Image 1 (cartoon, rainbow, N blue to C red):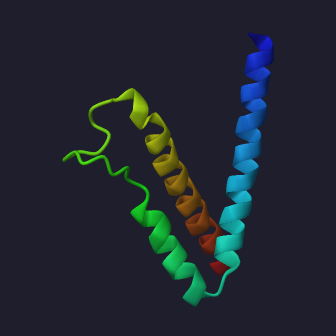
Image 2: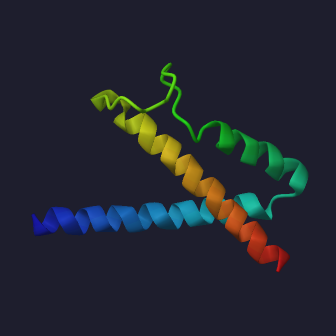
Length: 88
């Protein structure tokens, strides 16, 4: 159990590092390249599962789709944070 917990923590830290790097790279792009990418991320923040309220009914196979949508949201928010830092 301890080993599994350490592995999960390690994977989460690695994912966070990659997420932060991606956000910095997107923020560093020229606006003409950055804006379409931010739009693309925004379009993927909500899982498209055909429901009126996407993800409202938990279904086991939706887990990966929901996780991906949350990841796109986190990356887009980090890009926004980074752009805000650069403007200050």
